[in-house]
Length: 138
Image (cartoon, rainbow, N blue to C red; front, side):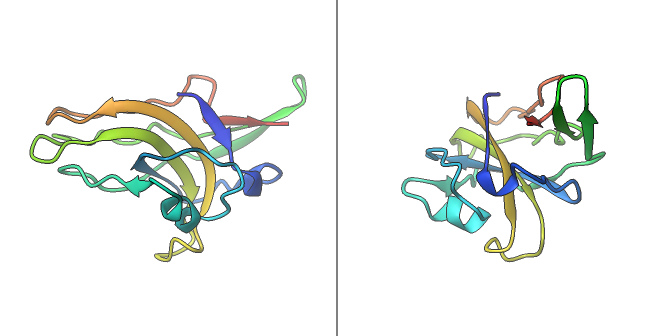
């Protein structure tokens, strides 16, 4: 998955309570500072395919790599969306990793955006982070 890092998260990405949501029609903009701003952008809608729900990530970790002068954010891959679509199918444009603050998306902080480009069809949907992690900071 190609990724952008949102400007709000470039210097100190949060490593607690990371979650992932799926959107359609999003044009990535690193200036978006909240999940609400992403969802309010032109053409962007959160997915609503059959059996869709936001997922909580596990085993979040931020490690410093002094050899390569960067930091790495990683977490366990999100759980599979079982029987995704079928009744209602959608083309997923992006997955957004964000720090969950509370139930108000105006407070939730986007961390990274990853291209997906998959259409649901009633089968299981599995997204996998790159083996090197979710993102690097430098």
